[in-house]
Image 1 (tube, rainbow, N blue to C red):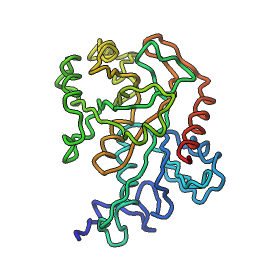
Image 2 (image 1 turned 30 degrees about the vertical axis):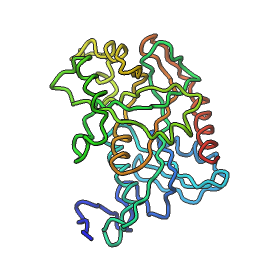
Image 3 (image 1 turned 60 degrees about the vertical axis):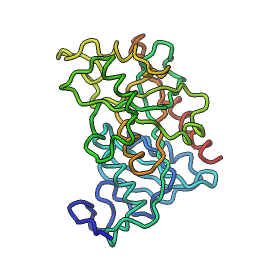
Image 4 (image 1 turned 90 degrees about the vertical axis):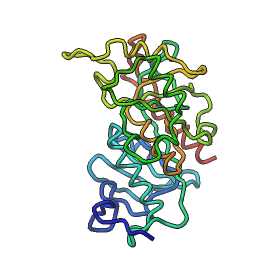
Length: 291
């Protein structure tokens, strides 16, 4: 077996993965991903028992038992760059012998469920008690193109149609579209809006917001809102799902994002009292995982 060098697989002094600071025994196979590290405690507040609590920088993990099911809650921070770190290190914990620095002969598939907040891009999706499950993720970030084999997980015709119909600028990152886990969508997505979740590399101009600086593509949100491919429309904007879906498919994991809609970019409505809906989504997801 090929040994992975120290500069590639970076470990902390205690042998844990460098950023998450986790050991393999501290991670469950079913993982709830949240952006906000403070939200990890909200997830684990439902647990019957907490086994491990580990925190480093903005990355916090609680692993415990919920109705007999072992589950980890892990914060990722914001953005696809953080997702790149977190998913690679979760996969290393599951599929690499950290002591010998070799890939395990038998590979494990993790269930990675991101629960977050998002802004709707369709006028008929209300703010508040609305959950959107991303059947697909549209990456406007470009991250997956740094990985070999990316073309094998990208929905090529869907992606080409988006680039053509939105007249996507050549100097922007090349978009890509990846499908969610059908298994997780079936298990966790009942009662949610289904659609394509757009992942942006930023919160302001990359999502069509303008404060003092002008937008390079003024009609971007309008074109995204009006685009559809075989009745698949783009339902919402956030900042993590494309990298989550792309890396998970390349590594053989199952991934799904479900978001609470806290704003609607078409109607310009916003809710600053969305915490009860986040709590409801977490409880619902934990119950469905434990079934």
